[in-house]
Amino acid sequence: MFDSATVTFSSPVPGLGSPACLPGKIKGVSVVAKIACSNCSLHELCMPIGMNADELARVDELVVKRPAVKRGRPLFHAGEKFTSLYAIRSGFFKTCVTTEDGRDQVTGFQMAGEIMGLDGVAGDLHTCDAIALEDSEVCVLPFGRMEEIARHVKALQHHLHKIMSGEIVREQGVMQLLGSMKAEERLAAFMLNLVQRLHVRGFSKSDFILRMTREEIGSYLGLTLETVSRTFSKFADLGLINVNQRHVHIRDADALQRIVNPHWCR
Image (cartoon, rainbow, N blue to C red):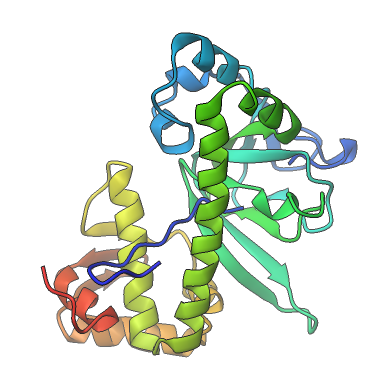
């Protein structure tokens, strides 16, 4: 997750549920027209590259629905039957679990080009909630059909293995984040990871909008709301970032890297 030179989070992270929970049956979720994977601008982010025309045609058969999910609405809930993975076409999600004392614990943030739903593979039930942080669209990838096609399309099989491996790496990184890093290191790593993932999608290397609240950031990083706000202010006072409500401009990415890894050098 963290190598000697840079901060890298892999976040392919987190089915359609029972018939009562199919897209279009949930308030806030509607189904829009199907689009072929081969024509999607995010194709190289969430699908394998290097496939021939026949293999690509098989993969195009995977996407049976493209639901639109309104901000604040769930895509799936913990306890729902797992049947599909979801490739985020646009928008932003958070995944969270409910603790024994009733608190929501954020377990990840997912953006366009990333995969959700892997939490349901092991036990055939989702173990977390997936909530849209802004109006979003996802491509539904029925898992049984995906496995069937993967037996004939080796590139897809390899891609599935990479996605699952990436989830293990992500979870190891989160454990390191929560287990050994100070507040400043956690927030610096979080911002660098976020801007890195956005940049791969064609956005700025230094400017981004926080789709999540500071409270949600704190829940994910294991910090209180006050600590998150105080650390943002400290970074701004040091001239490392500019913050205007949810807009963040990174002024000194190298300094943030050195906070995460004092031995880092360009």
